[in-house]
Length: 232
Image (cartoon, rainbow, N blue to C red; front, top):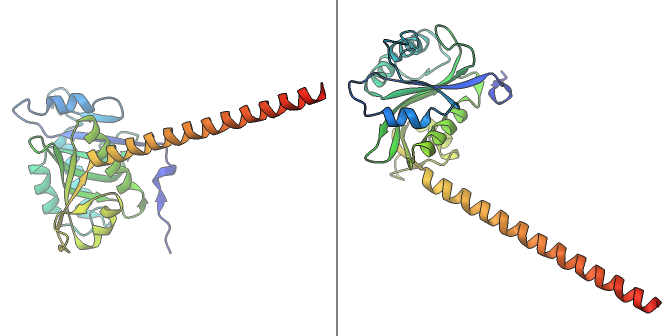
């Protein structure tokens, strides 16, 4: 049995996002909000940064998909290219060294920002077959990005074999009877609500424990004073 490389043990991992060049400024606010240092953002001003461009990175990914069997093995490379053409950006989990021209790509997703629906749509998502937790890390980074952008939902379409994987991370099928190419949705607002609820519950439990400890110390001091009086 082959062992997968555990990416959680690797400190030299970075998340990158490359934006497709546009003729408008529609995504400028999004670029600004997520550019906080946690994700390396390439806004694709190709006049000033021609090397790290959307075109270069998507062509690099396409070559890997086409000529290797460890990334997007089940997808047609032409389908991946078409996804890049219609997406707003590509987000990548990869090596901390320069990703281009030949850095390691552990997982990537082509995404669209659906601002009217306050959501992110994942058009294509793939992870390295020999890397453990690459897909999980990518999904969590997209969730964090949702939080920074105050977006409340993530959408994707899943093949039958991957449905259980996405369900593990909180995605649910829009149509419960669907069993292949199913639209799946994760409500990140509910996730935050549950997290706040857990935090409140934890605080309440800690306060209760603290009160119990104070009452116990108070009873102990009372018994001690009573013994002292009897001795006198």
